[in-house]
Length: 281
Image (cartoon, rainbow, N blue to C red; front, side, top):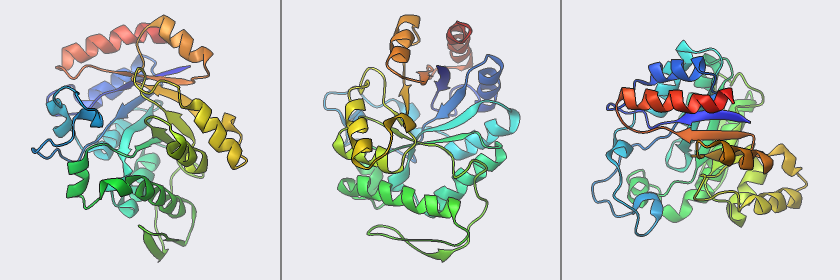
């Protein structure tokens, strides 16, 4: 099982380039950066969309641009995979996002993992002109349109939310046909259907979504004639404990990602070095 690290790269914690070097030097498989464009101060939506959640930490509105930070890490590393964990695809322009994904994959020589999710912050989405109840349908069309841009010399797409006239768009990703697409979050029937249709993996949050939705993913794959074994199973925010990792591996998990503290540089590096003991194991 491969082990990775995740942190919100901000102006208050460790430099992402230094973290990238340490991630590679200590033998981790991957490094993941989340994103939020901004956080409206109204704070209407509770953290994660969960009633009773604690106040939202300020690192949510201090994040560096996800693709810029990953490109910077790509330039100083050679081996580690670089993950968007997650990219808020529904509130993004799919044409520009397709170019960013392909560009980072080219710069990294084929090391990008495209982690995606529907998003939970209603007011953030509204500022992007995205009605919250359309986010699932928009994410689906955005991903399908991006696949066309990555794989076709003359790409086009026509849907309810996305229209792309016949177009040229380069660069194409280094990975063929494109970087692996990994869905985050819980997997009910609708999400499972999307995973089966256009994703290469599922990455629930450990401790919240666990692996309860795997049966739904298997059912959705079988409904369209896809082998569920072609969907990679990973866990985001896994516990950095040997027994927990053994349990995940026994359940078919092939990648576990640890969340790093959002503190100053020395605090983060202490955690990185501590988690590295599990890599050695």
